[in-house]
Image (cartoon, rainbow, N blue to C red):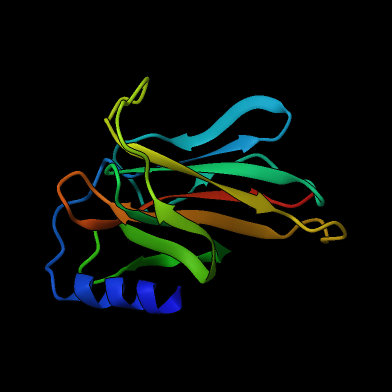
Length: 160
């Protein structure tokens, strides 16, 4: 896994960064509620989307959206600075990221998706006994419809 991500990173460094990719998305559910945090597609800023608090012992489903049938990775980490990475569109907003899911996004049909992306799900589990007040972020990485590697939006939550 680390070798695969390192290879992709090296390949991306050889490519100049393009304009901001607006077709990389990330959403996270709120557990039992029908609330969804994040965005399917659109412009990104150097600030994370606010996601509701996450209880210790709970699991959240995150959905990554990017070009169909392309590699993606979802990571969790501490809040980090807005870091531009050469060769990648958008910015990394995680510190010490840990990859929690990776694979290929889905193929068409794109039912109900505004930007015609493929999608993939990953689970984020907060261990029971996690202290309250820990701020964490979730962010994904994928390929835009234009073929450029890009970071998706970051979602920030706090443990209960």
